[in-house]
Image 1 (cartoon, rainbow, N blue to C red):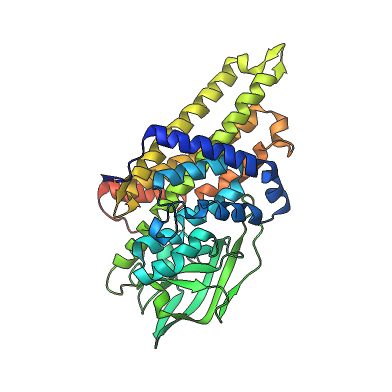
Image 2 (cartoon, rainbow, N blue to C red; image 1 turned 135 degrees about the vertical axis):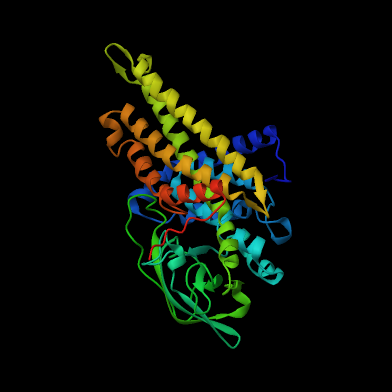
Amino acid sequence: MKMDQQAVSAAELDEFRATLRKFVTDAFAAKAAHWDEKEEFPQENRALLARLGYLGLVIPEQYGGSGLSILHATVFLEEVARVCFNTALICQLAVNGPSRAIEILGSEEQKQRFLPKCASGEYMFGIGISEPGAGSAVTDLVTSAVPDGDHFVLNGQKVFCTGGHWATHVLVFARFGKTSGANGIGALLVEKGTPGFEVSKPDRKMGGRGVAEVELFFDNCRVPKEDLLVVGDEKSTKSFRLLMNSFGPERVGNAAMCLGVAQAALEQAVSYTQQRPQFGRPICEFQGIQWKIADMSTQIHAARLMIHHAATHLENGFPNPLAAAHAKLYANEMVQRVTNEALQVHGHYGYTRDFPLERMVRDSRGFALGGGTVEILRNTIASLVYGRSFNQRRG
C-alpha cells in the first residue's frame, strides 16, 4: 500500500472539519427530520452544496472541482451524516460515486464532458449494479450490452438505484458477449431520457427515506459507444475487478457516514444522560451508563482510525481493498451497536419520534446492505488474507 500523495496535516484537517461542522449544522440540521418524515428528496440542500462547490470536492481542479483528497471526503461525509443522513447520501453519490470511476477509468473526452457538470451539480449520477437475481452474487448479472454499429444495445433490469429518480445519468454494469461469472462484465454511462430507458416509482424503505431507490429498465436502449466506460473482457475477470476496485471510495464513504451517525448518537446520549435525573441524580453518575458511553466512544474512535487509514492508503488511485473492507465492515456493525445503545440510555423517550434516535437506528441499518453486505465483506477479507479466491458457487 502507498500513502496518498496528497498528505494532509492534522491541523489542516481539524480546520476543515471545524468550518464544515458549523456550515452543515447551520444549513441542514433544522430540516433533517423533515426529509425523513415526508420522504422528500432534499433538493434545496443539494443545490446549496452545488453552489458552494462541495459536490466537486474531490474532482480535480482541471475539471472544475476542488481537487481535495479522499481523506477530506471522509471528513465531509462524516460531518454531513452527523447532521442529516439524507443529505449525506447525496454527497456520497457526488464524491464517491460514478464521477470517481470516470476520473480514474474514463477517457479524457469523458472526463472533459462529464466531470465539470458533476462538480457544478448539473449532472447527478446513479449506480445500476444489483438486479432481481444478482445482489451479493453480482457476477450473476444478466443485463446485456451488444455492439451495434456505433452504439451498444442495452437490455435488462436494475434494482436499488439510490437517488435514481433524480439522477441525470446512471453508471450501468452489463455483460458483454456470451459469458458467465465475472468474465465479460463492463460498464456504460447511460443518460436519463434515452429511448428504451425507464425508471420505476421510488421504493418505500426503512431508512434514508429522503433519497429513495428505484428500479431501472432497459429495453433495446441504444447507448453511444463514446459512453462506454469499461468494456467487458470476455476472456478474463480483469474488467470486472477494475470496476469493483473503483468503488473502494464508496465503501470508505459508506463507513464515514456510519461514523457521522454514530457520533451524533453519542453526542445525543452524553447530553441526555447529564440532564436526565433518576434516583435523585443525573443518570450519567451511574457506572452502568458510564460504561455504555465509554464503549460507544471507543468504538467510534476505532472506526475513525480504520477509515482514515483506508482513505490514505491507495492503490492506483483507489483505497486498498483490504483496508476498505476492514473499515466498512467494522463501521457498519459499530453504528448499529452505538445507535441502539444511545436509544437505550434514553429509555422510552428514545423510542419515540420526538427524539432523533429512532431515526438514527433506522438509517444506520441500511449501511450493512449497500456497497457489499457485511457477510460478503467477511468473504472478501478472508480471500485477501488467504491470498486466494473462494468460489461460493456449487454445482
